[in-house]
Amino acid sequence: MATRILWADDEIDQLRAHIIFLEQKGMAVTPVTNGEDALKKVREEPFEIVFLDEQMPGMDGLQTLEQIQGVRPTLPVVMITKSEEESIMEEAIGSKIADYLIKPVNPNQILLTIKRVLDQRRIQSEKSAQSYLRSFNELSSKFNEQTDWSEWIDIYKKLTHWQMSLDPSEEGLQQVLQDQLHQANLAFSKFIELEYRSWLKESGDRAPVLSPDIMGKYVFPQLRKEEKVVFILIDCMRYDQWLTFEKILSQDYFIDTDFYYSILPTATPYSRNAIFAGLYPLEIKRKYPQFWQGGEDENSLNLHEEELLKEHLRREHLRDQVRYEKVIRPEDGNKIADKIRNVTQSPFSSIVYNFVDTLVHSRSDSDVLKQLAPDEAAFRSLTESWFQHSSLLRIFQELAGEDVTVVVTTDHGSVRSLRDTKVFGDRDSSTNLRYKFGRNLKAESNAAIFIAKPEEYQLPVDPPANSYIIAKEDYYFVYPTQYNRYQNRYMDTFQHGGASMEEMILPVAVMKPRRG
Picture (cartoon, one colour):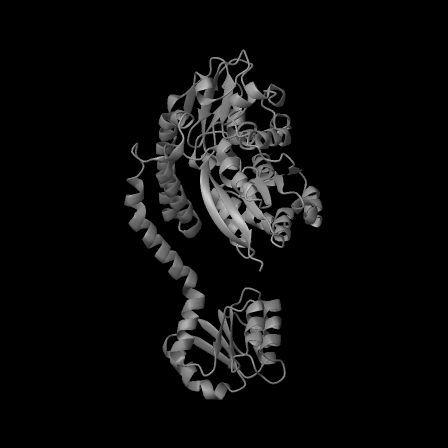
């Protein structure tokens, strides 16, 4: 079927040679001489692209553009102008035109513009598919026991890149990528099972940055240089979600994104307390028993983050005057954004923002959200839409006008749980889906990491519990009682607490405002 083009220009007769050239290329061109006729044609007929002269008598190009967008907002419009004035170009671009050209234009220029506008997505999709397939074997060859922690970060970055680059409509290619992600997480969980304990004993390049190291590596050096720092922890944020945030924030900030590994379990009571305390959970319980309550209620177990952070600052001989904020509701974030100067008056401020974790849990319990976000790509898009209208973005935008360093990270990610596995334990065992602590815990060996000596993992246990199990890959634990009910309820939900790349390999960004 011929590409249908509408071309509006008051000197359209002088462009007859251009129109004949396009028609010889198999395109159907409808010429009009003014904006009113162009708008009428758009209302009456389907077009794939419009060429619009900026300087027409009567309704000019910019006015016609506005009217066309009111009728067909997704129709691509290319503005053609005699003027090279920057203000006209900016106004046209600000009106979301597909492209603009400066007269005189030649037929090949018009043809290339049509291909670029209409075929860009297809060309980019084909190029991405070809690049991915070329890299497939090289990437898969790295899924082995010789791969170290830094190489796993590189693998995860590349797989995430392909997740966000490949066309979602290419179902066959998407399945290839999903299979490769499963293979990667299978090898990664084996790697964690072999290497994780040694990281807790080592330092330097042999071990990655872990949750207790975050403040010491990214925040305290800035404070020692007497820079003002705002530390923002976005609960349960995956790397792919951060990339969508980073794209928006890069307009206001210079951003340097690094990576660290969450401790196990990748759950708020353990990983977030470890970040603020600069200690592993077992060390927190021994050193500050009043701040470690035990149990599995995430809200009650993270009531002392501010106190743990102040103790951490004291141990590092830094001023413990820190402003600490926790955002549970949108209005909490708006209050912070409204009075951002109050935040930046302190040399060090910390903000915990909980909404992404809330969104993860809400999707698990809501059929509507599951339909809105049936997979990673849709869930990422949903998170991005929320961020663009959130009080969190307002906080970032207000901070961009201040003389501060902003450090952003998360405590853990989440994984889309697609496989259930039965777990056996006594009645006092915890109810978490991706990790459990209790007594005599049993599960399939391929689905879990068994921790018979929690102290080797720097984990506390309260009797009668004496062990932990951590889910691997995309498994989630289900008890045999009411098995089918819970299997169906939690199938294809985003969960955290286990050992997967999505939960453990996490971004940490140091951001400087672009102002000035």
